[in-house]
Length: 431
Ligand SMILES: Cc1ncc(COP(=O)(O)O)c(C=O)c1O
View (cartoon, rainbow, N blue to C red):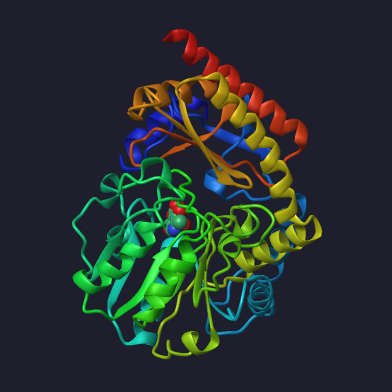
């Protein structure tokens, strides 16, 4: 099928909410490493990795081969039978995750991982209320929509009662109009007021992403999680750390994003990059927390041997190649290029992120910080013309999200930055 036919059938046979990037969406057919090719034979450098999911690079040979072998040996068992693959992966996750996180529950997506975490927190604490964050994203189930702090993704009023949204630690657009560090991280301190005024005073959990992904790679200040989690624990709640985007080395130097803040969550959720593109969600918890989920609950496909083989193989490569270190080094190089672009273009308002999770926020004016939505759309088209795939995000649709596969070479980082600079230059010349 050619690109035009695929696009036409997509419009005719898929739900319209399955929205694509670009006026004329790119129909991808092949990938290898950091490069992908479309149905018309055009090559692109992939700086978004299927939304931070192709963590090692497209079609990594070790993952492909391991999955292939597993599929030939045994494709599915359901959770009614223990498998070597599932216990091996669970043991590996217990080893890699921080603190006392030990027992895992496997599902097929980040949404389900977060659902499981909330269920677990409620059962463990006996409390019902959840503190989530404005600008956060948790997925597309009715519960996850309620946890999500973005009107465009909400679709329905919150269906599950008891969810309260705390202020986002969005320093570039501080919700309190303050400046870090003079602010004293008031956004985190305000959680105490939120608990005392908006809840029964007994929250079950605080759910947060270390870096808010869909929110536009919003990176909280260094003290944020110590303060926020400290308050929630004081009132009896646990901390659910959503590492769906930030996990597995993405933030550079550590396996999990939250390790940069020195806080050990009781529950952690993972998906996306865990299996280099195979659909896997995981919820890991302290043993006594996990042990509170004793009733009947299963996921037919959760822990499927083929999916677990993909995780196992992805972790083999990540450990062998020291992916967290790689992400730190390549991320620093990328960040250097982006900072230079901020110097060069007035409409680059902010550069932020960690490791290989970097964003630039586009504004009409650096003083007013008016979000440059139209420019962002034009920039997306310009990057496509340059042969570069990047992501877009943020509540105002004005944040470019850059998160290439973590085995990317230095040369490809430089090449992608050059293409992005050219695209920014095109937009600059238009204005
Ligand atoms: C932080 C975070 N949590 C949860 C989810 C939901 O994951 P999924 O789309 O796999 O259900 C996402 C997806 O983007 C996410 O970014």
